[in-house]
Image (cartoon, rainbow, N blue to C red; front, top):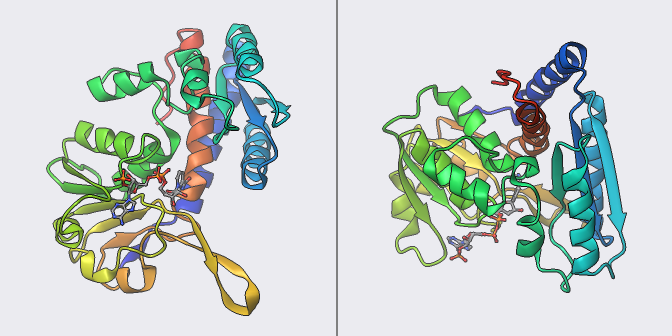
Amino acid sequence: MAEKIDGKAFAQDLRDRVGKAVAQLTKDYDLVPGLAVVLVGEDPASQVYVRNKGKQTLEAGMHSFEHKLPVTTSETELLELIATLNADPDVHGILVQLPLPKQIDSHAVINAIDPNKDVDGFHLINVGRLSTGAAGLVPCTPLGCLMLLKDALGDLSGKNAVVVGRSNIVGKPMAALLLAESCTVTVAHSRTQNLEAVCREADILVAAVGRPEMVSGEWIKPGAVVIDVGINRVDGEAGKTRLVGDVDYSSAEKVAGAITPVPGGVGPMTIACLLRNTVQAACASRDINFDLD
Ligand code: NDP
């Protein structure tokens, strides 16, 4: 049976470390890291994410600035707010909750954020930094996956890693991070042929697809470490819904060496890494060398 990777406990530990770092920065440098989160519209899932981000930011001892704008907000109005936040010395991290309403070009908005405050790591400058190995802000979900992988495996060098999914938010930055760890990386997607056979070659398998329980135990190399990024809501018993990942946990745990559950695996790591990135951005704003890892 695979070891269950406890992302919830790991995320709690990371948040505790972030909290200690914030306390020290406040005491030694009079620096309180601040995170601004911008929500446009009233998408229920986004509202929950934003509320959780604000709560955990405050719990870590940081400043939280929430900006809730109506669904009719224009791109110009949002860009004006971003410019204000870019100029605000108390704001070290800026996160614009996606998706944005149709009238707003999300690429234009993300690339208007000061790259040194781009705690989501989506700005083209940070994408470039990641792919060239320069220091920068790394997207939170893949960063969390990498932390779990290093905790499970130690050195990743030379491992065969397969990432299923090539989104800019998860798949591509995940592949870049694994390559930087000297893995041999394959990125699979909807056009990949013989996906099952490709997955079976993986010592490290990351599934970021958005298809409920698509990866079954038969796709997994015995002993592989499986990271399930997927969050899919499906019909459950008695008219209720439940969350499942992109991996069929019950068949996969019989084959894998270690595996993240859904919920309680990658999910909690994302906000913990967002807090970590905000502290990193705050330190960089004052040229403070602080070891966060
Ligand atoms: P996207 O929809 O942006 O990307 C999905 C990727 O999966 C695409 O590259 C697509 O290929 C590929 N894909 C789709 N169907 C197949 C298939 N049948 N076989 C192989 N590849 C396929 O999703 P995201 O990357 O944003 O998210 C992926 C999952 O991760 C979702 O369930 C999402 O909810 C979850 N997620 C979880 C987070 C967390 O905090 N834990 C954070 C972000 C996302 P192609 O490019 O060819 O279309």
